[in-house]
Amino acid sequence: MPSPRPAPQDDRSARRVAVVHREAVQGLRLAGSLAVGAGFMAVLPHRTGTWLPLHLALGAGLVVVCAVTQLLAVTWSSGPAPSPRWAAGQRWPVAAGMVLVAVGREREASWVVAAGATTVGVGLGALAAILWWVRRRARTPRFHPAIDAYLGAVVFGLLGIALGATMAVPSTTFDVSRIRQAHVIVNVLGLLGLVVAGTVPYFSATQARMKMVRRATPSAIRATTAALAVGTAAAAVAALAGAGRAQAGALLVDAACVVALARLVVVPGRRQLAWAGPRLLQMAAGGAWWVVGLVMLAASVGWGAPTGDRALVAILLGGYAQIVVASLAYLLPVLRAGGHVALGRGFDVTRSWPSLVVANAAAVAAVAGATSLAVAFGVVWVLDGAVRVVRLARAPLVTEPAAATTARS
Image 1 (tube, rainbow, N blue to C red):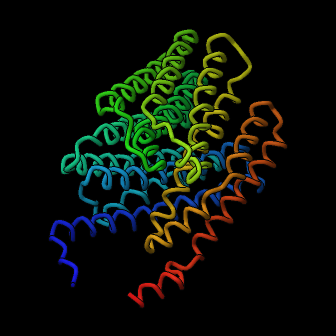
Image 2: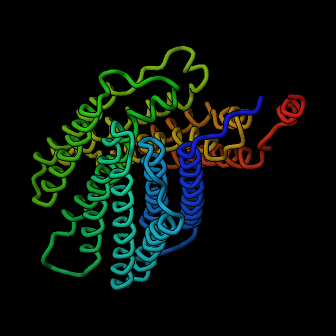
Image 3: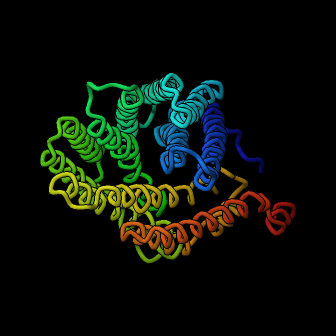
């Protein structure tokens, strides 16, 4: 008996998902190029030390944010997909602008830095317009809190750009050290932090193939991410004012928000851990490092503890990087597509216990000040991920047994 013809709405839904998946893949490829450039700059001689590879790596992370937020906003909320022209016109200014900022800083050309910052700002503004457009046309409003968090993250990103551009312009009016602190806070805790916070309650359930916990209501998620945004904004204002204790208090509020966020995340059982153990545990470890890093940063700015730089390493390397890697270990097989057999094999490829172990070892070593050991663990982590991505890309989309079964049926 022939299968029924799909309804027009189903056709539109399939096209919408296919379009946003293709654009997400393009965005991740562009981010990968920036990440490779950051790796080269980490070993090649240049003038600005760790600043250059760090900002290229953050540029790669920002392009990932642009790709993934659009993907999740469209697929979760059943909203329309932006056209490929709009998606490309959004991501390329972000990538090109980050490169211009890096080149301008390396060449000590303030006008190039300003041009790059403006270009990144245009790209982030386009991202905000796309997300708002998707939100207004979404058919599943319970995912609106995630999109709202992404829009809030864009606002912090634009503030971070403005603060960074201010530092690049020679002036005796502003205290550069205070601006730098605020710049780090709004970018690391505001831009990146809100994207992670808005995603984790929903994506943890997707990762575990479970229903969301009952207390993870849209109101609860929106309240938690809003409190995180307020705490981050207060920390940035306190940094500009030079009020260390107030900044520390705001950072501790952020830490409490992350702990509250953990209550909105699913608790996997034995079956879920058997299927996606490393991915789920890596997300949990990332959340723990996020809290530890916020407490360390609060201790540094409020009471002079020598933990400032190491706190950022804990948040970025131990926290966000692990959450992103665990998320991509799920997303990449999905974006590759190819049917259920290929999807299952893709999950097997990206299911990495070594990634969990060496990532946390690298974070522990970095926080402990053992830089060489942290770099060694980091290299192993990167190589493990690179090998798995290559294996995933080269694996056949349809295995012979599956094709034979289809032929027989």
